[in-house]
Image (cartoon, rainbow, N blue to C red; front, side, top):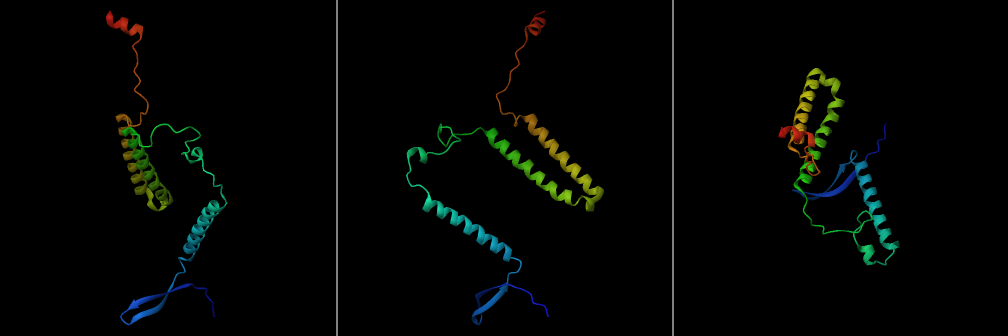
Length: 159
């Protein structure tokens, strides 16, 4: 006779016969429930201890936002260049595409040559998109660099 350790959650449910006491096995979820309780409990304990034991003498300097050791300059609602958002979206796009590479690498042997050809085509599309973005100047952050004509090229044009 084997003795299995099973966990069940007891709860009341409503049926056509009224309130019924039932149980539901939670063997697969027990670890998730324990880790969630431990995580929330630890976070709550640390926050509570910091509120109880921390110093309570706020000054204007302590209440100011911390900006990497530098005094805060300007407002928090300044407008950013559109290029900032474009680069952020492109980063997310390429980052997500790389996330698709991991499952492919794990299944490479099962996919064979058709899977290899598909991933090569996938990367070709990514490279074309990257070149397009690069040529459009989305990745150029600095001001445009103007090349001054040298004195010899000006003299050649004049001649």
